[in-house]
Image: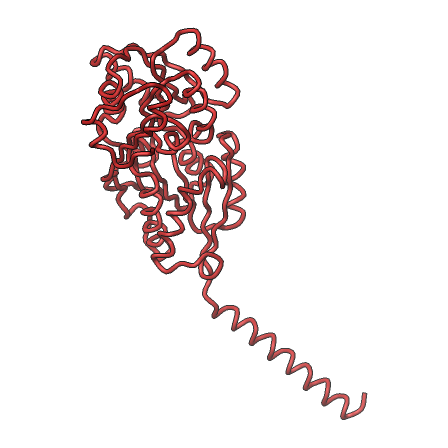
Length: 331
């Protein structure tokens, strides 16, 4: 190798090494884009009204999806058995925090990914189900928002009695796979006893169990149908409400989405509002706050939604005193 060749080789080597070092340094200086895992109980289409306020909450805090934050979505499609697999996928992606709604999904995250921070939304009884130690001091890697409120099931039955005084026998859909639902079903019976309402309790924990439950309703002929707060019922809301309409069954349900799908009434906390508020918890965790230092919030806003179109279809006249308390009326 001649002298000029050796000089060119050394120059190329030094230049290449310098460029490599510069690229490594530049990459090291670039801020890491946080990655959020969003574990949905249903599908993207059916949970759009919940995902949208969460995204809005993130945008209000300065996050732009795809620019300074990445959100990885996984959808269980109403099948709780898929949770562990989907959670492991999020863990493999090294997400900084997982966001999910409901007791079963939150319990699955805590069990499958105990070291990953979790922001739970609308969990019925996070203390009783072992998700957290207390609302003020949640402990561990879990924080967020609970939907727990005093006697929600009783208030729904009271509203049903006010709207349909003639109803004395109510079918109740609940999910035995959810620890919170087990407790909620007992609350329904306690409230029904006080109101002297007979309850047809129908445990449904998978989609194939809906038809047998509907067959029981056709056979027993209750005067109303209430669906409790479970994501399985949210996912299958159109199927449930179509059945209720066909059989002229009024009800006061946990989710407004069931009323939008043709149900008569719903009463409960604002679930979109809780999803929007979840962004605050995500922001604090991404900025270094431990989940255990973020107290769990209870709902402060409740909504009564009434579908007057459905009322007309099934022959129910909503009393003025009930209508006056509605947060939203669908005509």
